[in-house]
Length: 467
Image (cartoon, rainbow, N blue to C red):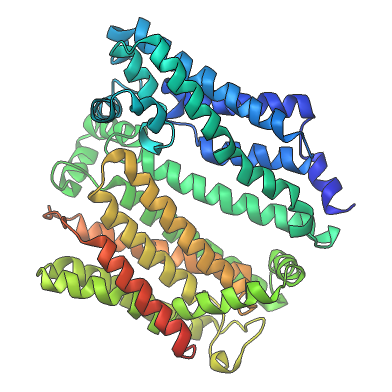
């Protein structure tokens, strides 16, 4: 079975697919749902299926356009007819900042807010609701709704549609590797979504946090432990859960890998290695080698140097030493673990001839660096934007980890072990940081610091050999 036939089995019929695209566009634009639905991801996936099935592009665009118009219209009508009741409904009753942010956007841009709001992520599903609550003239809203949907549909549908049309060429791998590819994609998505979901619900306003508070109040011993962990009125439940889960995970996974090590790599390791051998391409190899240089000692130093200078210049030695301790601890634990377990690499170039495989140092370092960066950045952001910092960190760490498979110097199980070890270190650093109240790190000239980091790391990749 070729890749086209394999993917075709995963897609619904053309009529159902058009309804799915219209439904996603409607939900993504609907005020009470759009704030929770990952609309961009879903519409891209559905458009990719449409492109792979060679569904007519005008029909696909019309489905997305119609759904977007219906969703915004429904939000407008809800705001217009239920003005007094909206703020008492969940999730707005618990997150009034959703409405407040959209109201500020509406007041700033006036009539154009409906048109512009469709392309601004955090307020996209909220602006039509606010327009209805503030009694925007229906005729004005209709024109803004239709014109913005006419631009939104191609902007969000075409990338996924084009990806679907070229899917067969992109996945030109043997049929025996379809299963490992599907397992890898599902595993990465499941881990990312699970991490994001747990982080959200373990926060101060999350369901897991509220349940833990209720449990602690009913038991004197738990209440005493809860109060002892409290800093500035909040217990770092997310960091505690991350430490427990990651520590248990890395311990169990290491036992599994070492037990299997007596018989060679895991079956999943061999399957995924065969998958990446089938995907081998000179361009991918160059990217993997570039990421390998970014993730080594010199690359990490280049990324961190501007931020370290800024922190010391502001005399924020507390943040500087927490981050430094995390990265140094990660390097020490990786060196100790590699020497202890002595697992051979699949392939060892000259500069890695004396280095072992488990766990992946590049992966654990990337998790620590980007994870801590996301955690510190998230504290300075509004709640609606915090998840973007974590998703950016997940993406960066995932790309760094997969680059080790592209150049063939690690098994997949090495990456899992490295990621879990990195999460343990992130949790420990965060618990130490949250042990007492800290002043804000803002204001931060992050565009200049990020630019300096990128320039330094580009120079490192271009001129210095791997270490």
